[in-house]
Length: 363
Image (cartoon, rainbow, N blue to C red; front, side, top):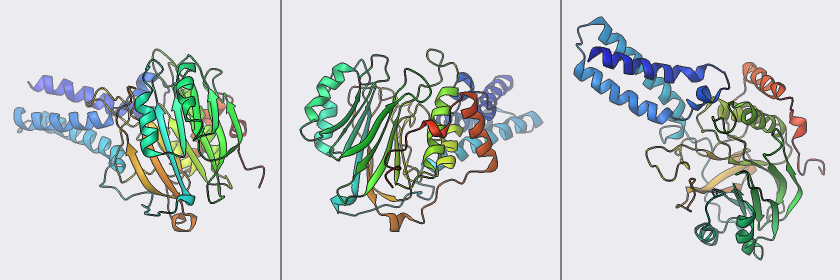
C-alpha cells in the first residue's frame, strides 16, 4: 500500500510541477486546466495517506509533505476565484441604463442546430452586445432575427469552428475583422457608444487551444493574448476584452495577460464561473472570459442555463463609473512578465501594432 500511495503521490507531484516549465507543448500547458481537480485529488490523497500509511516511517512523512505542498500550490492559483479572496472589481447597484453595458458571450458549438435556447436568453437578459463563437452560416441565418433590435453587427461565418458574430443594440464604429496570428482564426474589434455618449473599445477573441488535434503548442494562443494585452495597456478609451480564450482563468498565460494589459477580472473574489464542459459537471473550468479596464464596476455576472452547446453562455453587465472605479487594481507586471511577453510575440513574429485600436485615432 505504501508503494501504491507513493506512486500516486509522484503522479500528483509531476502534474503539479509540469506547468512551471514554460514549454508551450499542449501536454505541459494542459496541466494548467485541472488545478481544481488536482486540489481535490490532493485532499483525498492526504486522507488516504493519513489513514493507510505507517506514520512512524520517515517515507510516510515525506509523502504527506509532498502532497500537502501540491495542495497548497494548486490552492494558491485557484483561491482568487473563490469568495475567500478580495473582490477585484467593485459591485454596483447603479440603475441608470445610460451607463450600463451588458455583454453576452456564447460559444454556440458549430454542430448545435438548436438556436432557440440562445435566442430565449437574449430575450430574457436583453444584452447590449451578443458575441457568438463557433457560429457558421446556419447560425448567422438564425441570429439575423435579432437585427430589428440589435441592428449593428459584425459577421464572420466559418465552417472551421472559429466563426464569430457580434450583434449590438448600441452603435458600433471603427469595426474590423482581423486574423492576428493564424490565417483561419478571426478576431473582431470595434468601438461602441454607450447611451450616455461614452465610447468603449471592444475586442472579441477566440484563439485556438493547445491540443493534439489542433495546435500542438500554445504558442499561437499565447501570442494572440499577449499582443492584445500589449495593445490595450495604454488605451485612452475604456476597454473590454471578451470571448472564449481557450485558457483557464488561473493559468500562467491568463495571469500574464492580466498583468500586461492592466485589465481587471470581475470573477476575482466572486467565483470561478466555469463555462466548459456543460455536459460534465465534474469536469468544468472557466474558458469564457471578460476583462475590462478600471472605468467599470460590476452589476451582474452570471453563468446562464444550457443552450445545447458544450459551453454555457456568460452574461456580464458592467457600469461605466470611472470615478468610483479609479482605485480598482489588478495585477502589476514585473520586468520578467514584460520579457516573457516580448519573447512570446517575437516567436510568432507579431506585435501589438498588428492589433486594431478602434476609436483611438479619433481622440
